[in-house]
Each structure stands twice: as C-alpha cells, then as structure tokens.
Picture 1 (tube, each protein chain N blue to C red):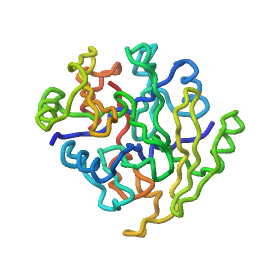
Picture 2: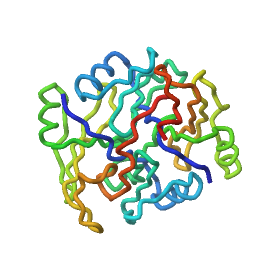
Picture 3: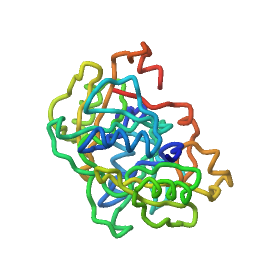
Picture 4: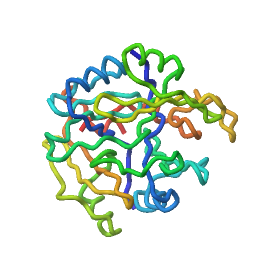
Length: 133
Length: 153
C-alpha cells in the first residue's frame, strides 16, 4: 500500500490550450494560476488545481474527460445553469435532484464532462455540507 | 461568469465496484468515505479532493476510462511508490523526470490512467520548497486547500 498525500492536479485535455483556458477563466470564472506559462496553464478551484493540457504534446491522441468527471461546487445550480446557458453552454438533460444534492451536466468547448453541483442535505453525521467551504 | 467554490469530487468510472474498492482502498491506501451508503458510488478522500468511484452502467451511460494522466497523485517518493505498486502486482510505467518533478503512470483495474507524482524542484518565482505548497506540483498556489477536506454529494 502506498501513501498518496493529495491530488497535485487534474489534467483537463484541450485541443487548443489557450482557447480552452479562456473558457475556464472567462465563463467558469476560475482563477488562473499566476505562474501559468504558455505550455502549462493551471486554474485554482479552492481545493484542487486543474491543469489544461494538450495531449498531443505527449504524443497522445486527444480524448475528452468522460461524462460528469469534474464536479464544480456552486451555491445555486439553477442560477449557475442560467448564467452558463446565457453564455452559450449546452447542458445535457435537466437539473437532477438526487435527494441529497442538485446537479447539472454540460461539456466544455472541447467536450470534457463537467457538472455543476450543490449538496443541500446534511451528512449522515449531521454536518452541513456548507461548513466545508 | 459563475462562482465556483471548490471541486466536490472527481468522478472515476469503473466497471466493477468491489474490485475498485479493493484497489483504491487497499492498494492505493486511500481512505473511504463512510458517510455514504451506495452500492454503485463509493468515495475516497485523497487529501484535498474526493474521488467518486462509480459504475456508469448503473447510471444509464456507458463506461469510458479517463484519458491519460488525468489524476496526479502526490507521493513522497515516486520510485518507492512504484516499487510498492509493482510488488502488489500493478504494472507501472518507467519513471520520468521533467526537470522539476518525477512521474510514473499506471492504470487502475478498470483502465483509468493515474500518475504517481512528486515535484522536487523549488518554484522559480518564490524559491520556496514545493512541500510548502498544498496544491500543485508545477506552480505555487495558495495553501488554503490543505485544510479543506473532500466532500460528498
């Protein structure tokens, strides 16, 4: 058994790094890491780094993240969905209510599966999900 | 523009939940989130973010593995972790050295590629030790993530 300390980054594959980075910065409103370079662009989400990568740099064929891979926590799923829809983002299906959370799935301009997500129900131990922010 | 508070989870699609439970819990040594009670969606805490291991075929869509190198797991020593995984029967690719970090890729039983990762070089701008940064292996970021635990939903 190994000891994994944390997740250093999640790689988000891009067909064109600069173009996809604009979406994460301007539409999703994520903070671009100030040390990003032309060849390595990172965004901070509060707890984990998203790195926009071009698979062809590594000689790998582009393949997008599957459905719903990255769940972005937002205060209000419907409000965020409205804003994204107004910005031209197409959602896959309706907003769901699992009984503990709301979610809505979309793909970024390169087809990566993203979810906007908000848990409203306290955890089994009674803690509020909002306490973790 | 929307307001994103954090990443609640990263979905890791698998085909066999029991096999994945063993791999992520007993081979990778991640802590399973016991706040959940689902048969087809289990969660593991990876320090700063939750990995939601789930079966697409019970969620009305087809399994597709994550693309190469999606998840970079920070370990203290890539070579040592590679040796331990190999002893456990996991095939791990050759370790590479980017000049600032080490990495070695492997696949979980469902075929999802995962990267063992460790940055050893100080950051250029600050000269700081990478161990002092909570998040990325490649660039300095705020260390607020270190106090934030994973989440379920």
